[in-house]
Image (cartoon, rainbow, N blue to C red; front, side, top):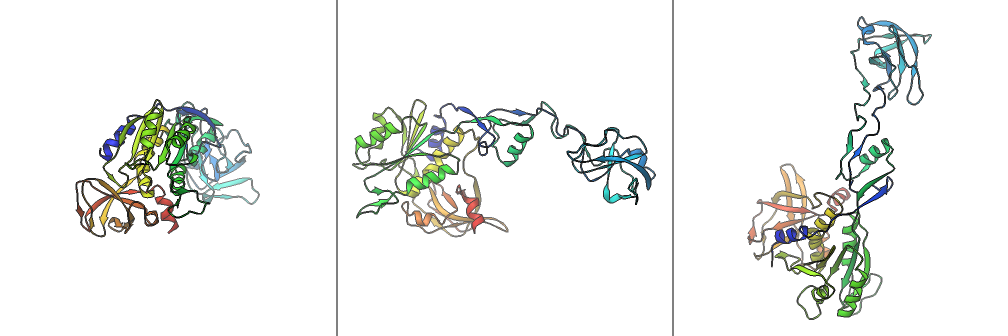
Length: 408
């Protein structure tokens, strides 16, 4: 068996070249930009008032209070006075153009308008440039405003709209086929007979993929029959990545490795020194990747986060798609048999002195019910057989950690 770190290195060293595609501004959220985007105009496109008040020549306010003639109004989107002569003021609204030759804006709170509305008394001096946002100060024409590699979120959408980008180039999301294996499995709408269970892995993996913005093509359940599995693999052949669950151990009916070899995949590793997830398989055929994940649901979950997420995330253009890790104090003692890195369910929380990691009781890699109570996985090093309460440990935040935290 190889270590988790060695397995990750093999996966990342065997990723095919990424592809790009053009998507509309309505579809770009959650995608990674594949090219720099530049400003095609100055922003703001004019000297803009930062406050409601009066545009003035700062020199006219030195002896404040001073009375100035009101020479007009400038409001956002409504045009207004184009220039300003000394000894005059222009009423200006937030976001409106500042008239040429005006070099300051005095806020309305520091002014008093005459009863007839023809004059304004500026009560306090204002300095040159005060309350004016200069043309091009936020972005100058030709300047890079969004760099390649940026993940597009709400703020990036606003930038795209500002410069009229109706569509942009992004890194293409890989197509993914999802296939579960096992005679014991039935679909969620079916009633299990004796010895059968409902297929939970397909739904947990779909959820994990959706958190990455990827919709998988679910190809159903392959039976413990080599020909049936070959047929299902043929259906998956056009996808960039195939994810299988089950059938990767050493049992008499575990055919995944054999069938992967038969359909042209080169198996790059089969077995990782981790708990749960030991039988994980990774294979490549040309530009196609295949991951064989163990059938127990917690094993499937942990193996996906350790190996599939880093691969798919990078193919999507994300530089660091791995889940965040934190260090915190264990709330109780832990023990395990050394030799494999363990990922065990935990609840983490921020206390006054830092993170606390509370290991949860569970019944092993089939106990998805116990694992569902976790918001993290505490990482138990392979060379340790015990860790003490109060000791600093490392934990992997689960992909929906923030949603879970907000729901509590």
